[in-house]
Amino acid sequence: MVIAGNIGSGGSYLGIYKKDDNGNPVLVFPSDEPKQYDSASYSSPEDMIKAFLQDANINEPIYAACFGISGQPENGYIIGLDWKFSQDELCDFWVEHSWKKKIGECDEAKIKELPVVRLVHNIEAIDFNVLLESGELVELNDEANTANDKDKGGVPFNCALIGVRGGLGEALVYWGRPPGTFDQETFKTSPSEGGYANLAPSSEEGVKLLNYLFEHPEYLKGPEVVTCQDVLSERGIVSMYQFFKDKQGEDGATAPDELEKLISDKNIKSAAKEIIKMALEEKNALCEQVIDLFFSIYGAEAGDLALKYYAKGGVYFLHGSTTPPELVDKLIDKLKQGSFMQAFTRRTMPQVVDLLKSIPVKFVQDANTRMIRGAARRAIENEPLASVFYRECK
Amino acid sequence: MDELGLLLNKIVEAKRGIDAIFVSELKKGFLLDSSKTENGRHPDLVRKLGGQAGAGGNAMTHMSVLQALERRISDFGEETGLGGLELTILQLGEKGDIKGTVVAYISHYKGVPMVIGFVNANPQDDSLGNIVFYCEQHIKDVRELVDKKYG
Image (cartoon, rainbow over all chains, first blue to last red; front, side, top):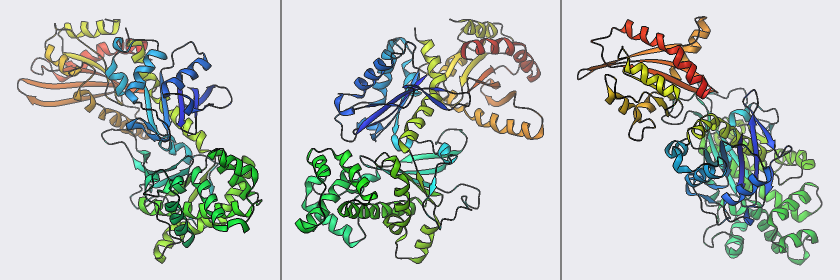
């Protein structure tokens, strides 16, 4: 058995998995879906994992773990949390708390080299090879050329992943093997910190928003720079709502009370959800304006990503949990017909427009589940060797 | 020392064609087991296999190329109906008075690709045919204990 998790400042999901006969992860605890924890109420990942191990109350060693995090695994940093940690420290912790052994009595070098606890970017945790075989992908680009997904040498084209939650996640997907290994060639994911790139709007409304944000640094993470994820994030949706509300003044569309309360309570995640819900249900003109601009900037960024990565294999739109399940079909229609796809292909050069029109844009239904299952798959890969190292401990 | 370690030492101490034996996983190049006896013909060879920390040095990392070889040759065997790869004989060039031969048997234990390698460093005393014969004599017993430990 292994533990897998998807850890972020807005909430973390942890689950215990085992391998089925086909090598796929199966959730063992909890039995229905991974357990959610309020990350901010713990002082460290170790404390949160301890609480989970206590809740699970499993009396056998869990050999390996993998956690996808919204931050930088190599620097032990999660966006929006004060935690400071490292993969090596988590390995020590694991040996003590899950294996119930002392690190000094085990082969520490092998445990950390494997490693028994692995940290990856959460977007990197998604197993793209498994995702490709999934039947749940929805094509957003009606003009996409799906007949040809490889170059003349038979090498599959690059792809790109993009998704908005607490921040903006972007990754390159390429065909190959990790340097220095002899693994079989498959799709590999290379994460990025593209969310921190400077925002460069290409529409008049987008420029107005940029200026508004400079005038209202309270909506920014830092006062001097507007990053992509200052806009393409849950808090970005709320900032855009304030932008349109301020712009329209008192004569504009009515601001719904329940939404205003969520914003004044600083419940940003729920406020963003509410804005999307009201817009998709066409219940509030202000929210509809927000969503149109949001998807316009989102679509432009997705197109930019396709151009930068030369992602002729496709751009994969990772849908999180911001849209209620009953409105997902409406969201897909909105993405296909609305500002997202228009902005995706809106470029100056006709050749570039044609290139972008030919690129598949796929909607990935439940990215959060894929992140944690992908993490579980990575932990399962390390489980047999981790169990050997466990048995070798004195 | 466990029974696998004892067996590996015993084979090397017999001083008949086999100077070191290692069991290594091929994904990361971890040396999992090896002969450790000082009573063979080349005790220095055993130390080199383990690297400084004894967990497998660079030498073992390079062995992970066998994983790709096994995959490709097994594909070849599958397509031609000749069967999967059983063993690989690597004959190395001369360095000083040593000319190495490694006979590598590749297996999967719980999905982890592993190699059992028999190393000979005395070609002047042992013909290639004899080296393979000695390995074939011992591989069944070694595999049995590797399977018991890791399978």
